[in-house]
Structures are given as structure tokens and as C-alpha cells.
Image 1 (tube, helix red, strand yellow):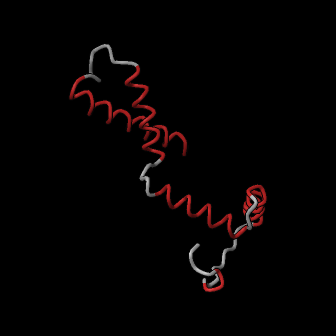
Image 2 (cartoon, rainbow, N blue to C red):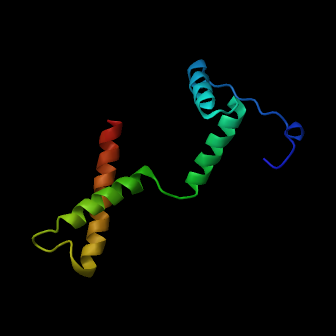
Image 3 (cartoon, rainbow, N blue to C red):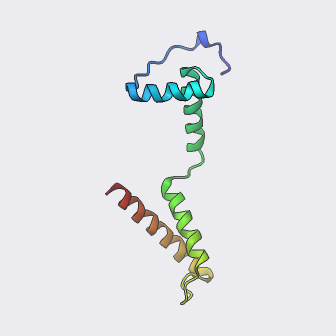
Length: 103
């Protein structure tokens, strides 16, 4: 933090007792105050958002890697048209996994 901590207005945060206990345990483990732990976790979370990767993208990437490793006997997943076919299939698999996850 670049500003003097006494010049930053307080910000109220009311976690459940269970969440507060988990955060405090993590802060203790990392040798930080509860406030410092919250700041680090929020900064990491916001930084990872800028990566624009979603769970759907991660699942599609894994499905795509598996499809590339096992080429289709008919050749549907080869060549220029195969790239688009594989990408579409990868996201279909990802969507199915997300749907099954929420069921």
C-alpha cells in the first residue's frame, strides 16, 4: 500500500463467523494480520480476473488437449476445418461438464 494507513478510510466487512475463522487461520499461517490477509487475497483475485480465463475455458482447453491426443479415425478433427470442429466440440464438452456439475 502506498498511502499511509491512517489516511485510508475504514471499510466495514462482516463475514460469517466460519469465514472469519478460516481467514484468520490463513492470516496466522502466513504471518499476516487479518486485514493484510484480506488485502492480499483480494489483490490476487482481482489480478487473476484480468487473465480472462474462466472455468469453462479451462475445461474446454483440457477437452481440446485430449481430442488432439486421440485423432479421429475419419479425420474430422484434422486440417483447417478440423480446428474449428475441435474448438466447437471442446466447448460442448465444457458446457456439458458445467451442466453436470450444477445438477
